[in-house]
Amino acid sequence: MKTLTQNSVRQTIQNNPNLTNKELSQMLGCTIQKVSANKIALNKQVNKQATSFDILKKIEADISKVKKEVKKNKKSITKLTNTYVNSGGVNKEIARNKMVDYVLNSKLSGKILSLPFSTWTIEKKILNKSNSYNFLGVERDKNTFKDMRKAIRGTQLPFEVFNGDVNQKIYGAKRESYSHMILDYCGTLNTIVDELEYAIERELLQVGGMMFITMTRTLRKIAHNERLNDFASLVDNSDRNVMSDMVIKGFFFNAIGKNHRIKEVFHYSDVKPNGNEGAKMVMYVIERIK
Ligand SMILES: C[S@@+](CC[C@H](N)C(=O)[O-])C[C@H]1O[C@@H](n2cnc3c(N)ncnc32)[C@H](O)[C@@H]1O
Image (cartoon, rainbow, N blue to C red):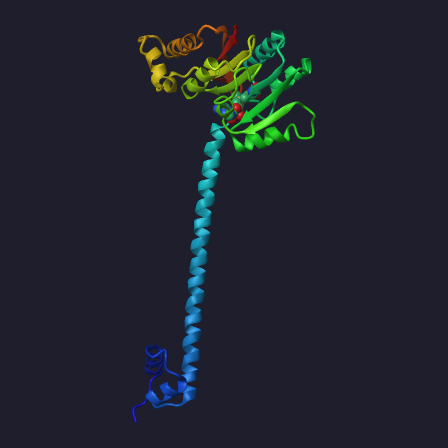
């Protein structure tokens, strides 16, 4: 009689998964116990393989988790550099005080649309001198928004908050919705031209109300806007800042129409956290006159 090797028994078991132990033993010419012992051994092997597979899967999952984590960190670092971090600086303070004085001297009362950041500096300065205003504070950055809301939690201050783009409170807003609009973007004009034109054309300010718009004077991005490019093409060999100033001024002169005027143009520079001069900025004060 041919001697059965362990391999041939196991091979036969694997090739005939639907046969019972008895049928297998008859086919192999061995005892049922031998079939059963080899089946158990085969099962153990499969389980062992499954375990190594599981470990591999876990390692892969861990690697992908780490990769995700690294990606997230990279993103939050990029985000951080895009986030407003510098609320200090003497010149910025001068610009803020101008806004506060204009608002208080207007003698208007009512809702002010603003971009308060988490510090609510301008808004608190106004409320310190007059309680006839309430604010709709808007912030698009989620974390800044959380801090902004946290800063006023538990206070009775007349602040309403909105997490989103400020243009969501401009487009579709009713005529004369706001007494003033403190649009302290500190961004570039090309990204806000449409909403500014809309706010002026739809007369979102009450008569006597002011719109304060802060922006950088960088030409690089400004000139990429189709409409602003018209103003940029009017000038050629000026230095970059003079040229951006002409583009910005051209835009506002064109946008104000008959019912608004440019009340003041205030140039200032941000101060970096290390004390050095930062970006060159400008504030436009637009007043609704009729
Ligand atoms: C320059 S800071 C405001 C500074 C603040 N007014 C002060 O006096 O310190 C601008 C803030 O508005 C947010 N912001 C800028 N543009 C925005 C937009 N279009 N919609 C909503 N939030 C915006 C920025 O994330 C930032 O927190």
